[in-house]
Length: 265
Image (cartoon, rainbow, N blue to C red; front, side, top):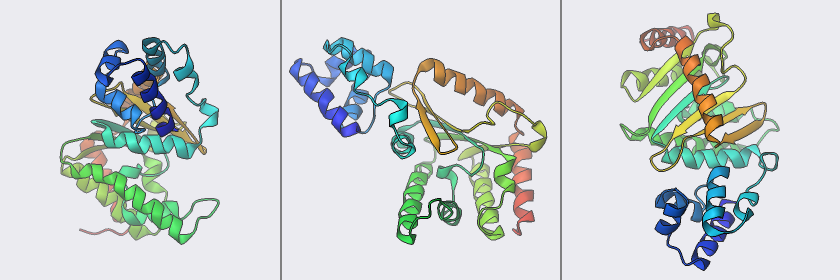
């Protein structure tokens, strides 16, 4: 959908005799954001699409061409998120059932993806694991993106794969945290109810466009782009973070849990 939409936007812009920079100024966007949309790397938010319609005098064509939420599959939503997280300067994750994808080890990812229903072939599982590990390459940059993760204690306690897989995965989080590459905080069981119990959450900030949020739960995914909706989810994250364990205590719990799974040293 992104490439088709981008081609259409480019055609409308060129028909109006505008450069990307000129359209960006008229629509109160950045030139790079326009370029990403035209190249099919991003789908504009509904607010962006309305501004583009006004700038190009296209009525509500660009706005109405965006798919409705109920027309977009979780796979399509997640493909957008996969592209966006590569461009983000800051990412904040809340994990409810599994460790976040960008923080998963190869064996943990295989254990998660290998338990998919309906089942997938070994070849398809291999492809998905490779894709997930490619996402994690953003952590190879020592600074960007800044990554915070709040992990519900359930994520640590529910064994995925073998005990050795869990110990390796937890110690991977410990190493990333101890080196300062990420900040990881555990949401302990004894907090009880907290603002993010209903779904996982990813918040993303960018240099050249407004922040976005992605929620997923029960085989339903949604990319949030309205400023009010994103702010509400940011506030929920902040509230949950305030209930989570401090960094030092979180690291201690992570290490203790890895030891329970059989990790030593």
